[in-house]
Length: 319
Image 1 (cartoon, rainbow, N blue to C red):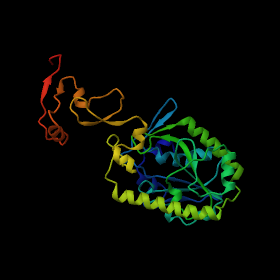
Image 2: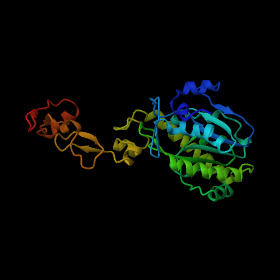
Image 3: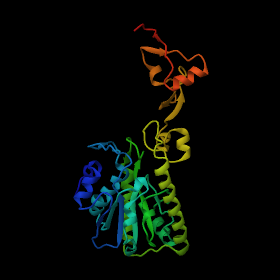
Image 4: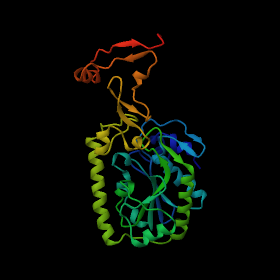
């Protein structure tokens, strides 16, 4: 079995070549079971650490979305006696998932993906009443999701994306709550052995709704990738997806961590703050110098554009 470091740290080209596939395609392992498990190997963060960090109850690595899902499918599930066929994709983060190239999804009883933050599950409308009941019987909490590889699969079978405990995705600060992951794996094990031999087909209404919903999501993310790829978070420098994020200059992940944009009380420049008590920018915090506030709005604007001739005075220590 491959260790977690293998899945988290290897370049995507290496992972695909190890399984005889190309990075613009997919890895498909057909083993006989009637359940298909999906994860994607591309990551939003391009510079992956050559190691991961484990401390207390956390695993920290920027590639957890969704290399953690690949590790769960390839290493964790077999240890639990769970047998699945495997589909590992690329292009999910840019709304061009290679899952669209996979043509055999309808041969399975149902499909599961492990590519979601936290401790809930989502179906993207690929469901039936019986499917939702089965998820509830396994104590899964169903919520709303935006997008994943499942939205590219051409199938009438029911599907679910299972949260695997990671948070802060798409950033260098991404981490996994190990206890959340363990609880989700336990729920999935219960769900799997109760339903692995049952076929779940989306009802007709769900098929139509899911088709429109998936198309809308795919179009939205493809348009975003094409037209808004240049807008990045002021703090983590990851792409900003929504209009709200673009207006604030920060991604929802950083906003959720308490990061905000402020105006420096001393020099009036806009800066990123991670402290509610912080009202000075980095430069005005320096011990040696204090910036003199620009005398009027015109100079303030010029200063923001990097044109203001900053004046300095020595601090009280006289250093």
